[in-house]
Image (tube, rainbow, N blue to C red):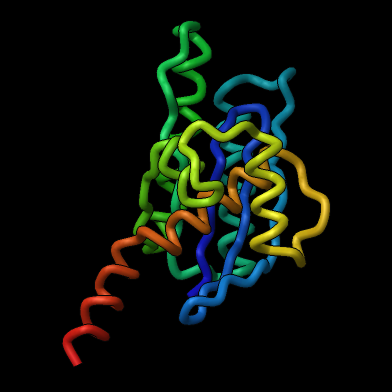
Length: 167
């Protein structure tokens, strides 16, 4: 199964593709969708929609997961991030994918063992779990971490585990 992990942002959205086969995780691809701050919010949201649509069309993931946002002290920043997140959740749904949501501390714990891990710890562990990814930025590492988290905790995994246990 190919999982698309998404680290939402209006300026930069990280995305990562992780394949899971049994207990084996394999890096497939990752990147950033960067918007132009000089453009209107609507144009930037449309660019996120187009960018994520292209990624899904090109790679055909079977499942998607996104990191939940935390409440920001700056209301305008929180609103813009919420708008971006809404677009980034809608796109996979338009392609028929279920979209799982995970709290940041759940993602961190699934990758590092600590729900309060620093960005550099997440990057280090993602590179250890997916050595083929090579050097990556924080947003890409976060997106891959979301995909890894979904590989561990996703509903599809619970169904697979239950059906194996029932045999």
